[in-house]
Length: 556
Ligand code: GLC
Image (tube, rainbow, N blue to C red; front, side, top):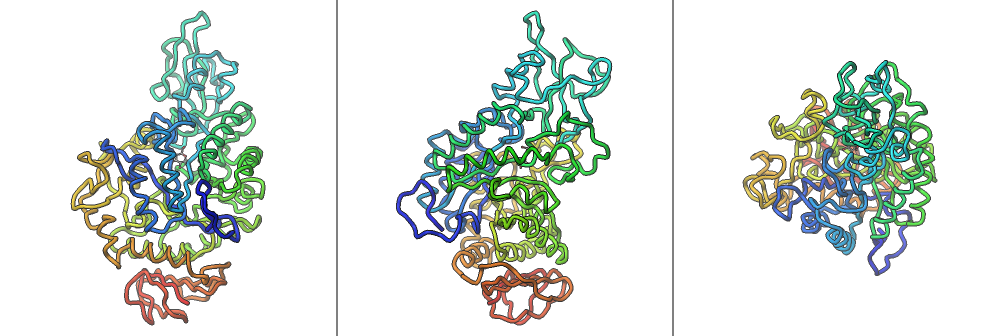
């Protein structure tokens, strides 16, 4: 690995960019570690735990948004993209985090949210105060409503978080008196509802009403993003994960759509007009030109596009460096499906010789332990899958807590904070279950996460057995397995080159890296004979001639 940007002493040149086979550790800052005792994680908390990330063996951290935000969607509603939210600290804390991370050879990747702003962004406040057709409104998607009174939304798009993708506002009074709308508490676009005050336009928000979509046809929008990119890259940041990177461009005329299929968060179909408009590629080309001035930095797109050819378009040499691939994060415990997911991910980068990426979970989806059945079986399967994932060529993303074997937490209704819960009319519990603060040490909540009596979401008592402190001392723990696998992945030349599939019994899979490592997985309920080779690492202790159920192994 070549040394991160802002450190001084040189390293021998690496054969390719650092991110090509990097392990990124995803930190959900609210839930990682709280240094100031308010029950919410912060930058100083992350700084205090850099030693842990170094011990784990990650090459980089990706921080979910830490920019200024009213936190309607926990930071994905940005009101000032060039400042740190006081909840997490300030710019000095951030600079110090980057400095200390680099001193440990850990790179720092931020989250960038270009598709929308917060409704508290000064641009949006100005848009609400300005009349229809104004320059201020042109930065967003404002439209007149349909129907005789303009009382119906401009088109039939739903919001990803539930309800319509449009909110009706009250336009300013041309005689000077302004009736400023309050997003989120507005007329929610129910046709026929009576207005208080002056009926006005509607604005588009693919997510919550507090997240108005920017109009990427407006030059000011790109110019502002350029300022933001340079602001952080000049501070030594090593790249960005670009939120909703397939969503910025919108189809001309914002047409209605027939036959909505899935409207689930992040699993919409490729025919969905809200995403993947071809004009998005021009935006990525312009963004890439800026990145090219910072050659150490990586641009990673969140791209929920299923068709491999269309996915690959985002990774053309003049667009993004990496694209998040969610095949594995959506796959259950089935060897055929896992193999198909791996083939799908490889196919999605093949047309452009791009770098594959792998992720089992993140802050938007169920944790893998839960997805694989929960309890001891879920843990055994998650242990096996991390060996599969880390044996694959490309970049790997590990969501904080996965290395401790955490499962989703069944939270009581009153604890839920994800906007999905309210927007869905309390039918979808949202994503809080996978966002519960990490257990660090001790026997009871908050397990060293905070000095407050509890964290922003309650941790289960049962996590006493899963604290980082306990697992560091236990050579059989999930954390120890991660550490060993990451260490071997970094050091062993056998973990290099492409993969070839091996024949394997039903319910199993086996592949071999061109460098020489074989990885075998058994998803069945019975042991199967091991492929030839000496065991380098196994997800279950005592693997000898047989591969136990729910296990994986690395062989040389
Ligand atoms: C992305 C984020 C998700 C967020 C949404 C809106 O999908 O991963 O957490 O809610 O964008 O910004």
